[in-house]
Image 1 (cartoon, one colour):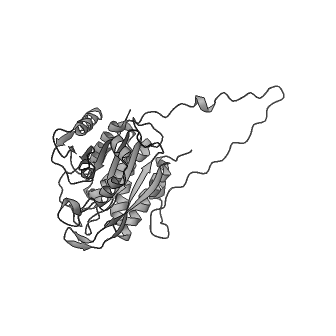
Image 2 (tube, one colour):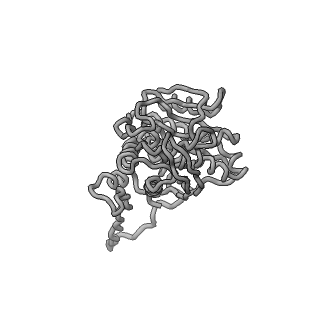
Image 3 (tube, helix red, strand yellow):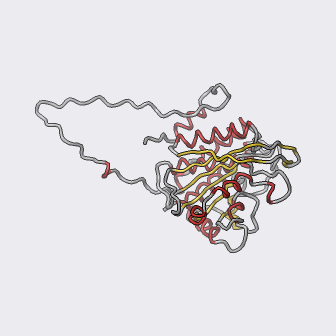
Amino acid sequence: MVRPGVAGLLVALLVAGCTEDGEAPVAEPPAQTPPAPSEPSASTTPTAPTTSPESTPPPRPVTPGDARIRIALLAVNHLAGVIGPRPGTSAAYFRGAGWVERQLKIWGWEVRRHDFATPAGVSWGVPVRGGRSVNVVATRGDVRPGKPWLLVGAHLDTVPQAPGAEDNASGIGVLLTVAEALAERRSRLPVMLVAFGSEEPRGPTDDDHHYGSRAFVASLTPDQRGSLRGMVSMDRVGVGSTLPIGSTAQPSWLRAELVRAAERADVDHVAETGQRSSDHWSFVREGMAGVRLGSTPYAGYHSPGDVPSVIDPAQLERTARTVLAWLAP
């Protein structure tokens, strides 16, 4: 299957003009013009092809150097600068979900929507309506029941008053960067990517947020739970000069894995504990291994000031390099 590279996405997002609904246009596969058949000369005899499907080299392993941070920046600009605030049950959220789904499909990922209910509540001081939301779930077709697999996730929703550049278009941007890097390259285990809905709080307790990831965990079979070899949640990963790697408790073998990955990727990092405020907690509380990347404090948190200008591309790159090092064979 031919999967267009990053150039397709860049062209799609940078061209002037929009589709009828105001969305940035999605890249189309480039037109393929078959070569004209050559005519054998009278003095030559056509020979059989020297290659076969069996001789096609396997995809090369993914590396930290495969991160294309321009993809993450384009995602931040589109989600926070064009779509804006996107509470998990809002029309804006579904615009964002559709856009993310289309980008994943460009690189050949198999995408499905996981639908779930989200209750009404108060999100960071603002009443929000209940309704349906979705998780956007992508695989390369290689995640099999009972076989080891890895999950990388980021929440797509925001609180009502924030455009959500750092919280959490930054995480979604790195998720798409990882998707492009893996499109034609090998990871050590099959990988699932999830853009979670309705992560933001609608009340004061553990059960008043992380709705999308909790619904996703509830949908997993015992075999899927038992074979998951780690979940990484990227949440607020575009601010700061070092990458926080946070676990819910100490010690954490998965946090140690991510620390070693950051070291291999030559990324400045800091290990944290007591970190429960992201979608990894939904997995940990059900007995699976989960870690959060990100959480550096910043002035625009959950406010109208959470705009693309707060993002530091170098922090996005630190995050993407660390995740790709963790996924690499």
